[in-house]
Image (tube, rainbow over all chains, first blue to last red):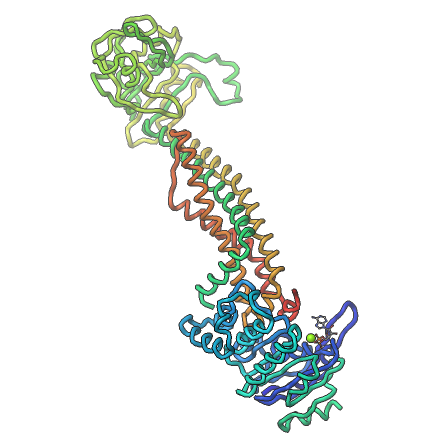
Length: 237
Length: 397
Ligand SMILES: Nc1ncnc2c1ncn2[C@@H]1O[C@H](COP(=O)(O)OP(=O)(O)O)[C@@H](O)[C@H]1O
Ligand SMILES: [Mg+2]
């Protein structure tokens, strides 16, 4: 489903070039559950942003669902993000002035869906994530765990194939963190491809496939559940 | 994105920053109110003045003694000869000339019994009322002059009212400048012109006015002409005839056409000038929008990053922020028009004579102006917002 070939990205920090991604090769099959771990600054977020079409590589190629993404312009990438990719961030990134319900609805609004069409979809996800009693609350009236649940609802409202979570439990206590992870895993069980960046080894260990990054490279890959990724693992050893 | 959703998101954002939005709207409102108020007053004044002048009809040429044109040896060397009644009569035979009215104006006491009123006194002839398009309410106007005139007077409606009240004035005797005159007519009410009360006038025969004011010549000769000739042609014939009689051009000619068009030019310019003055405060309001939008984009950078992550295109971000600026400006425009209406109402109460002409076209134009201002002020910050890199934007807190 996802294939990265020789992907590199260099940032300029002052006059110091930083290789955030250094010739990364990676293949991910649909429905996989991956965790990405590694020291701070090793390029985990950059990798996630690259896969999420938020960032553009300097070199290398990226295939998503068999299509080459490098060729797309900015507007087409936005459309791909809306349709295929859900993001969950450490800082939730909810709009403070909108209710939980309105936040969840945003991707549908951006897609231009009619209110009558949106309503049942939002109702359904709110019910499913157990947010009924909180739907009309503003984010500041919610606990951290509830906020992250709202953010997850927003991420999956469009039924994307891919869910990218960048340290989703970073701001949460261990109890709500565990709840959030359980929710993400439940979504994965229902078929969504899940990538979780985390600092927490306990969480990282739960994933079927575990990546380790350092200095912009994937230095360890616990093994793809499917054959193609085995090649990429050896290529970097 | 649906228009209703854009509107909902944008109004929500504006309502969240209530005070800030209000102040920005106020800035635009003051500008729009200033522009529309000043141009409305200017346009009203223009209409009013032109209306006042054109009530005399437009096929009229005035001759005044003395050359107003500066420069030239003629003005220095020749002494100005007064315009005489004979000069006026000599113009009657010119082609297209319809009426010739000699005019002298002064003022004096008008007495009836024990009542006295100080008014303007105009000396004219029997053609004056028709030439100036003044109507007669009772009796008739001055007789067509033939040599030594009878002491007959015609009263403006106000003078009649002040001296006689509801009683009849026709046939009664009044004193004008101490001399006894018989009232033969009362004018229809004509109202004010540029603050000059046209009803507070007494008309007497021209030859009697000349001797009453002890003047050597006429102050003006008004000539009306029939359709079929241009003002320039008639003026030129008058010029030739008077030069023939005076030897030099020691008089000046003004055609009503000319006067109206130059008056119109001056007043239009005035309207534009005061409108531009109001434009300065509109500019200040626009700068307010720019400032607020720049701040907003800075504060909401993380939000922009998030929207991009959720699949908002650059175009949508541009649309959202541009709509925000546009909505601010339009609200300012509406509020400004309201403000203007309020100020106009107060002004109209304070100065009832104030000429005000409100046209829906100009109100729409004011709103359009506000919209353009909003778009221009919003385009740069909105463009910046749309151009943000989503990854960088998301990291902003
Ligand atoms: N927008 C950026 N500008 C400059 N340097 C960046 C930018 N984003 C990331 N970097 C650098 O790239 C490297 C990898 O960053 P990141 O992917 O965020 O690491 P991680 O998520 O693993 O902590 C770091 O050295 C970071 O400083
Ligand atoms: Mg990171």
